[in-house]
Length: 504
Image 1: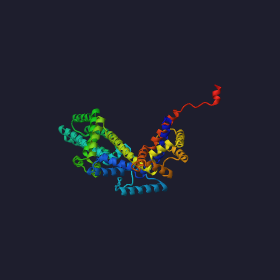
Image 2 (image 1 turned 30 degrees about the horizontal axis):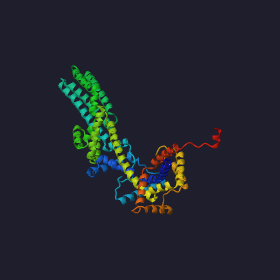
Image 3 (image 1 turned 90 degrees about the vertical axis):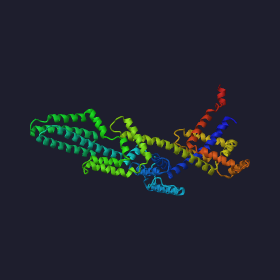
Image 4 (image 1 turned 120 degrees about the vertical axis):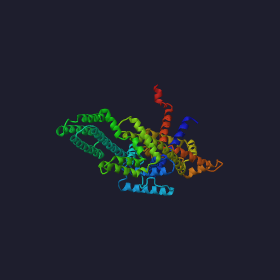
């Protein structure tokens, strides 16, 4: 048995595998689309990510929360419905087949009330959607409003206490209290603007400083115009010193850090949100103020989703929030870093999930490959025997394989559509040793007679073919191209004609 014979035999066998693996790939892709295996696996992976693998109350919460995620517009819009009568008709057929499959397998619809879901979700879409459902931005804003309200009250109280220690006349006391009330009203306006998101937190601090300085200036003018005796300059200097301490360069950094809650604090407040809400209620004296109304609305929305959070998700979010805070190293806004940490967490989890899906798909591919081999009667043992005995068949297959490789050079394994036309033309000229023709069945029966147990040889041949088919068409096309190139490289030099010989 020489090397050219072995290479021709290998090319013939690979040629058969390539044809059948193309068919198996199409069947598997069709089943994947109709039965929504990718989308279903993604949904279940998200549920496992949030609630763990054990079937329990935690997994039930994770399933409900995952349904909330899939109902969110950002995720829901990823699963775009088909347009046009033909496309919608196909969609209805595939949906009907999916429902039949669920009834036959006694499985529930993992997509809840929806008929399907997306096959892929970007990590940033998942992170934004999860944070939006949990209301992290709203809770962060609500906690920040409560802190600036408390800060405002402490400022006014500190100024008032200073005025009590100063020896002011009755007239000057009245002037000072009037200016302090106007300052308090200005502070209230800023708190309202921030609560309604008309200004940002840094803008709020800058405007508070302006109002503070304006209060000192207005008080000095009022004392000069209407006061009696000496102007209480000492008191105004002490108030100005407070402003410098709070709104100096270092003081502003500390103030902004204290007024903006960290993600770690937000996540920690979720399980005890009722206690946090009671603490906020004690801060606000005016329960009808716009600022308090905004906080009340945020906590009512939080109450709707807080019971849906599995404990494992809470623990994961706490760790991610702590990591985000450590990475930011004291920066003012860590919510973006927190979102990025969620994206990384989701992305790494989906990488592991993708590995599980590939292993499952590999098992399905072997089953489909064995079914295709049995239906096509592709017995590897018989195919090898036929190719080794029939030089004409072997040469014809090799020649067609050569033409296919030359016409379609090896490229991206996903781009195999171009070889289908060449394969169809080749099959018209080749009678491959597969199928259920009378000659093929008779020859296989003769070979089976040499085995002690009937049909063991044929079953073994189908199994070998099924495993080979499951390797995929791209694998066999790539391998065929390499072997064809090795065969061509191993050819001897072309013989010279007589004219060339005589000329030498």
